[in-house]
Image (cartoon, rainbow, N blue to C red; front, side, top):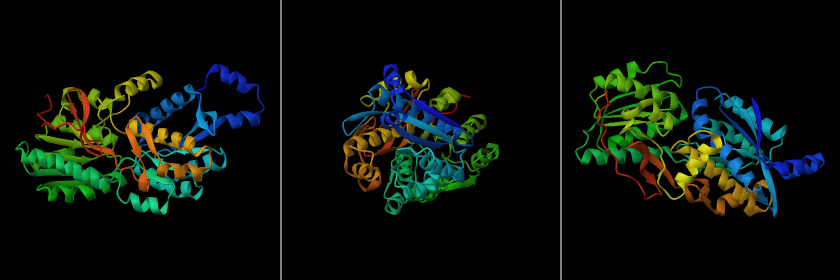
Length: 400
C-alpha cells in the first residue's frame, strides 16, 4: 500500500501547480516511511507511529515547511506497508531510496524491523532515528552503523528499572518476593526477558514461573493459569500489543491474585484503559511520559484534533520528537546533505515535545522506562534522565 500525504496551504499548492515539474520537486522534501499497516504489529503502529508522522507533517507544513539554507520546503511522506516482515521492510527501504528517491527516511516501527532495515539504510547513508526500538547493544550498533540513532532506551535499563520499582514495593511490604515472568519470542521480548530475569533475581525475587510464547499466540488462558498455580506476588510480561491485551483480559477473567501486574507494549495505549476500565487501575507497563509535563497536554490535544486519534502515553511522543530532531538537524546543516545532517544529529541539543534531548554517542540517555495507570491516566513511575516520576501503587484486584 502506498499513500502520499502532502499537507500544504491551498495558496502554496496553487502556486506550485503553475511551476515546472523540476521546480516543484525542489520545493518539496520527500520523506519515506516503511512500517506495519498489516500483520501482528499493525495495531501498535496505527497508534504510536503513523499518527505521529501525520501530526508532524501537518505541523511542519502549517509553519511553511522546513528551513533548508534559508528556503522553506514543505514535506511529503511516501508510506509503505512492511506487513510486519523484515524482508519486506528491507525491500521497501530500497524502493524508497532508489525508486522514489526520497530525501530522508522515517525509521521503521519496532525493535526487530529497525535492526532488520539498519544495514540497507546505512549502505545508502541515510540517518535512522529509531524511535520505537528497545534493546541492548545499541552502542555497538551505532558503531557499526554510525548513521543510526537509538532513542527509546535499553532492555537493561527497562528491566533494571522495573526490578527497582518492584523491589521498592517489596521493601515497603506491598508485595512478596515471588514473581512470574513471561515473554513474547521476538527480539523485544527475548532481550527484555534476558535482562529482566537476572535483574529480578538480583533484587531478591524468586522466579516461580517462566515461559515464552510466539508472536501470534492465540490463547493466553494456559499461560495465566500456570502462573496462577505458582502463586506469584507479581506477574511480569514482556509483551507486544496483542499479547498485552490478551494477557490482561485473561488475568481479569482468572482474577489473577497479584499486587503487581506488568505488561509491555500497548499498556500505555488509551485503548488499554477503554478495554479494561477499572481493571486497568494499578497496571504497570513498558515506557511512559509525564502527561502533566509542560506542553504535553497541549500536544496531546493537537494530536487528537489533527489525526482524529489519541496518542499513546509513550512512543507517540518519542516518534514525534525524533522527527523534530531530524527537522532541526536539517535546518542546522543548512542543506539536505545526509552526512551533514547526521553530524548535526550527533552534536546538537534539540527542543522537542519530550523536552531538551541530545544524541551524543548516537544513543539517547533520556527516556521513560516504567509507567502505571493511576486515576485514569498513565504516569511514569521510573525513568532515566527524568526526575518527575510518580510513586507506584499496588494492584488492588480486577473489579470483578
